[in-house]
Structures are given as structure tokens and as C-alpha cells.
Amino acid sequence: MPSSRRPPVRIDRGFLARGASAGFTALFLGGWLAPIVAGFVPALGVSWLVLVGLVGSALAGRQIGVADSPAVHGAAAAVLGFLLMIPAILVVDHGVGLTQLALPIPGAAAVGAAAGWLASRARDDEHRAVTR
Image (cartoon, rainbow, N blue to C red):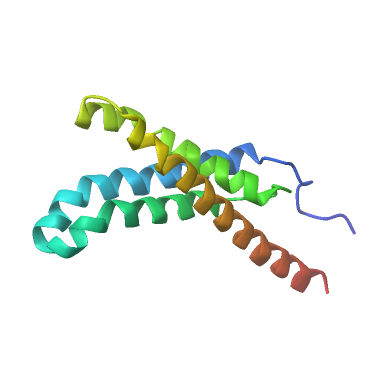
């Protein structure tokens, strides 16, 4: 019986774009909401952008499709999602400093890789359950 799944690929380009888009959307909306959150809950406002960065990277990284290297795929999607934010950062901050890239890019890669790996575990468990 032929499988309805596509053959595995190292990077699933369609899901890479979806992941980067999901990460970008979370980062953009979270950044846009940062002043509002800080105004209503000052204690949360201090760490809001870090939380948004973690959530955005995880959302990007979990979109793995049929990638056979889900950690690499998740890291790439999370980093691309962050890189899509650079024009918005340029507009708001009138420039991008090295410190604005030094931590977020490796952090996004690490969180995206972990999310991709976890998503692959769930995908493989589901696949095993279906094929039994």
C-alpha cells in the first residue's frame, strides 16, 4: 500500500516558510503589544520581549512538515522568523546593534531546534500509531 506521506527531505521549504511566517507574526505582534503590556503590568513588561522571543521561536520551530532533520529545520525557521523582524527593528530603533543580534539569533536557533525536535517526536509517535 503506497504511503500518503511525501518522502522526507532535509528542509521542507513550504513548512520552512510557514514556520518563519508564524515566528515573524508572533514577534511582530508581541513587539507591538510590548508598550501596552508594560503599561498595564509593569512587572511583565520587563520580560515581555524575552517571552515573545521564546514563543515566536517555538512557534516557528514546530512547523517541520516532512523534514528528516527537524532540529536543523526548526532552527532555520526560527532564525528566518527573527531575520524578518530586522526591517521593523530598523524602523523603530533607527539601526541594529550587535547586541540586538548577538543573543536573539543563537537563542532563536536553540529554541527552534528544540521545538523542531519535539515536534518530530510527536510526528513520529503519531506515524507509528497509524501504521500499527
